[in-house]
Image 1 (tube, rainbow, N blue to C red):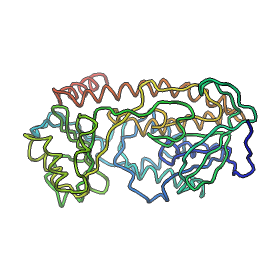
Image 2: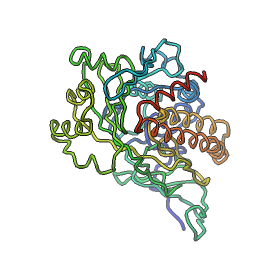
Image 3: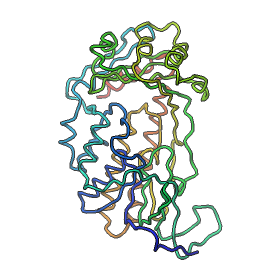
Image 4: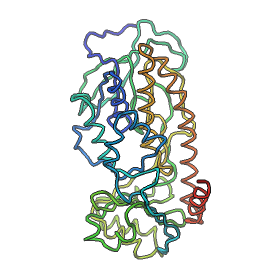
Length: 400
């Protein structure tokens, strides 16, 4: 089976996705003198907001930033007070509070600020904006085998197709393209499944002035209000807004019955799930300044992995999508990118050795964290909540 390469542009390393993981990989490659091309479906870096605050962990996100030579730049962007934590019950009774004393190992940073730090560290033109990948296939002069995908053998070169119909070839294709990755099918038949938890996302803007009671409730960092398999997850942004997720353990179709184009009707429908909750908590929804946006939480299988396949691998959510309740998604994506970049630098000219080394550390780390995330989901959304999460934090404190 033969394919012509003459009509395609060739990139030795192609990274699909300009999220934190893909950009970290590109940066670590750059500091090691290796060029890469990043393909991103968004038209430019300003196309949308990049989400809320992230706590960046010493052993993962911070280690990745050190490998990228960006640790000092990260420290300059840390949100003071961001590690403050409050946990309330459904009656708005404070059951746990941890202050940010500035000595913690998980400082908070705005996701958009972190992405900008990475983008600004790359040579101009590294990211190809408005380049949506729609598919990819392996290329070889002698593909052989008649079994499932894992039985096929090829040299590692791939052809990638973009939405505008153009193609390019690459010696190493990295899927850093998130939950619904277009690269993942080259390696795995796994698809994300609904976790049983749905979010509704919203914001309260200029909170200290416009929503002082809510601002005081949430304070400077992260806030949980939990009970009976539901709750409010909120944090303060660096711009003074409050970013909120209303969370429900519910059937997959529950939010589809709500008309989110009608703001008042959507607020009323969401609050039907919080009858009897304290008015201060319900007001977080009533006072929302932005449209309510439904988000269903999906995850890949906890032990998701694949057979070593020449010339292609995954990182971040494309490799190990999990629920956000371990706080590890962005951190894992970044350390994935750093580890892959360092492996490629350590095995010059031998992509397969680099990928084998990278995946040997990727799989056990991702599986362990995915199990932690699934356990944390059950801890937060429990009939006895918030007590299980209070017990969890107490156990962590006693182990330090």
